[in-house]
Image 1 (cartoon, rainbow, N blue to C red):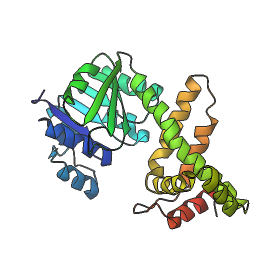
Image 2: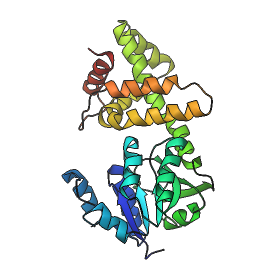
Image 3: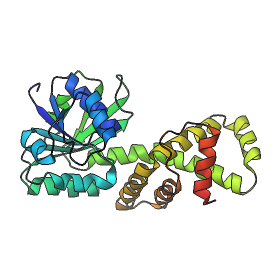
Image 4: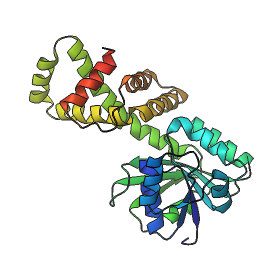
Length: 279
């Protein structure tokens, strides 16, 4: 697989890190700079990715295209490569329903679709990142990551299983972040935040620190998590389960201010709680 050319759309923090792993495995990895920001270009350069210039040229050169983008853009990104005849991997945080829509767009153009879902942090060491894949061509994609720090796991030959796994995992991790912030915002609005913190420190001592970390995540990533919460809600609804909690989480992240350089500290928490409360 070392002669495989991977087209990466588009190298954000996670995508660039995965691209660097594939470069280390001997793959050629290309991206398209047209319309992308200087920050994206810097990430691509740091990961040693080759610039194909345009999406059309990337599509022409790639054997496999890997889409790692904010969930709200997943279908649009797939449509950008209409007519691609290779293997297209959607590794975005989308519901099985959205994944199947992406797959239809790719397969209608003559390509082969693999459903994917990334769980964990951007890969920097073994044991941090799992890539779940499903679909008939999933083993081919998993093979690209053999002997790398990304643990690629084939779930099944069914499109939607990998996306469902991502939704199930993130429903807890990011949903819990939303809940702890909402609870703390309610305590503040009720004038009982000091009393809540005193009780947490006695009975649930990990929660004050968790609320600080959650506030940092909301401030730096909430703009991306809003759509992810909506995709999770759709996954619950499709399974006949209540979807309201994650729709509320989407609204919470939508209200959070965007602070790209935020720290996990009281100042960030204060800004996020004020945003949540609309104050």
